[in-house]
Image 1: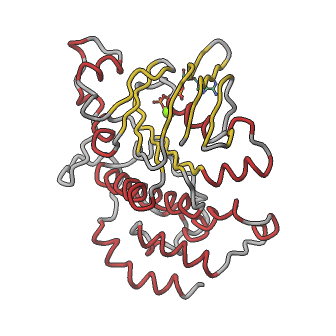
Image 2: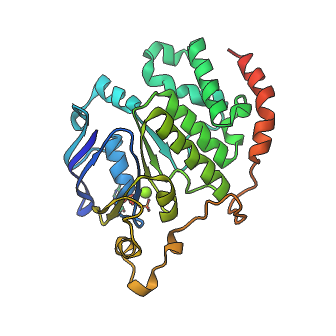
Image 3: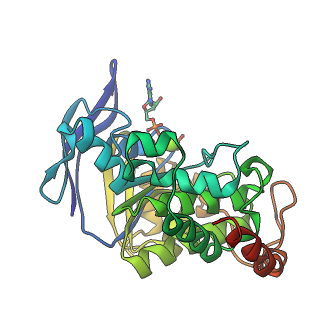
Length: 290
Ligand SMILES: Nc1ncnc2c1ncn2[C@@H]1O[C@H](COP(=O)(O)OP(=O)(O)OP(=O)(O)O)[C@@H](O)[C@H]1O
Ligand SMILES: [Mg+2]
């Protein structure tokens, strides 16, 4: 169980997150929605301890995350993986190396510095890339991949941490609809199969409705909705987005995720078939490395 107790973050006079109380049981897939500036990223960044709360507590099981430091904090950063909108891979390093970086918090400083990864770790990385449908890119510099491929690599890197919790801050905001679907399907699959808790900020209501069993709505730093997709009525959504009753339509917050949607927004990306066709050959090539 992840518990947030009166969690607050102030930046000067601005209260970005305002006395948030939440219990998130292990294994839930939770979507956090709300308009820009509502405090969604600040909330995730506190949970991950990228920033320190001004007040309140974060607990995970019987660990008080708020006060961790040193090796205990590093352990938390391993248990709590983070996925970002802009992927945060090292572009000039190959994909396999990027994924292996997810092991850093499992290793001694010397082994990390020396880039020493065991055969098991390399096989684990390849298996994860294969599961996410990007093993054929293992030897390419990460910067040469499409956005959707890079986000899948970032998920593989997160999984190498063997996390207990995955936090994702708008993981599909930079992706076209097809890649957005692939990435959300991957997160949902990890949540279902491994039972890892996923907490993800999303800027589209329909994605939250499709993928999350629980939706948390934030408005001006506070939690103003906490319920199932069915409970998130149009009236609730209007309240959440703070729009006048006649000026709000759910489509305003929507990115179509349907397979047949052609309204691609970004650069051309490889099809899933192309990805799969290359997979076998490239897997053999990647395995030759280990
Ligand atoms: N480092 C910072 N310094 C000062 N103010 C900040 C800082 N980070 C966030 N804020 C402010 O805190 C509030 C919440 O920001 P946050 O980034 O958490 O919102 P968000 O819900 O993630 O928005 P978006 O949907 O645009 O990503 C905003 O008013 C923002 O300007
Ligand atoms: Mg944000």
